[in-house]
Length: 453
Image 1 (spheres, rainbow, N blue to C red):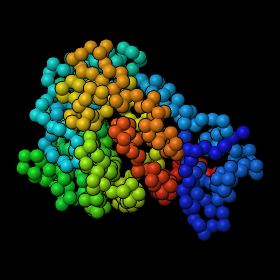
Image 2: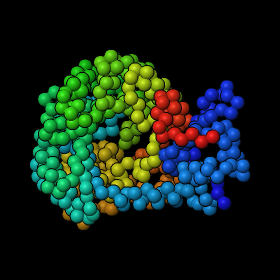
Image 3: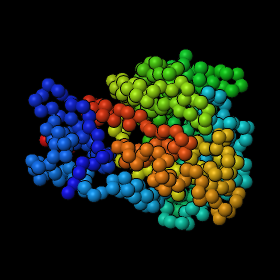
Image 4: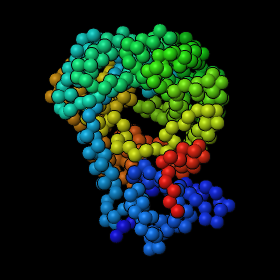
């Protein structure tokens, strides 16, 4: 016998003027969507398949909208995730070349210091990579430069990048490099060097609304000066580089949003469109501000439902301005993030090793249980129980409500770090999933939707 999967969501009807209106059914188990009639919707909701023809039943089985009656679906998904992690042939490292940052953003949980990674850690990093690559076959090396503000440790970025690139050439590994930067120091010559010499192809840059909003939030520590103009100039200069295009680089423009700046987001989208940013290889990310290490940053946060509602509006508006909107409907995810990947680590500027990039230089996470180890110590001393490395095991023990959530297969648990600190970590699509299905349909992104009457 079989049953309707618990990992299933529906959109509202697409056109309620039709006698047998259509809607979209989405299996979060497989990440596949079906356009179905209202009568088929009623059959699925009623768990009544007696009148369905064989091809329809086969499609419902294939998309895992219906599954064996005796199956423990959560165990199935979790086991798939565990096996996928084992099959990973990449090494991934987030590296903080400095603990310093020019900015004093109120929502940042880090405690910055004027400290840059010492040269003696460079060979230790290479030794760590050698140790981890000896455990299994590796075909790619992924590096993300993070901070503080990583460009304040630019000399170390250049030194390490040269070592990484040489290693990949020697081992015949694919090299993938990203940087998360506030872009204050991202002058044109720096952008060129990052692309040409350091092989950076992905840039994440944050702009928190229009100038009057951004400049109250993302300000310099020394004199509280606003940074909007310089960041926008540096962003536009980066996008105009011929090397940006020829190397197929990508910029993610992140907007950290709460009740104090959400009104400004459409104006920023409009400004970016006027600057013809939408014609470049650019994506937009709307990020709700949350607590970071218990710093109270969520005091001004929008409610989950309100943020989810506005997010749909921002996506629609951005699309109307010519931005290509990707990832509207989440795909199947086999991990929540890097924390479960035994081949992924974070190195801070002091040589400490973590499983999560939000843990270093954050006072709330200074205690030993959050650290895997230190680059100066032998791997044999690693703390294999470091929080939140054992998410796949701990998720079974009521640390979160994930086992009973419809969105678990496309979420993986959100942010495990937050769950370990007793904070729900649910993504916005949990609150606007049905609307996202309709939005994808409206934007004609229907190539992955099979029509099943």
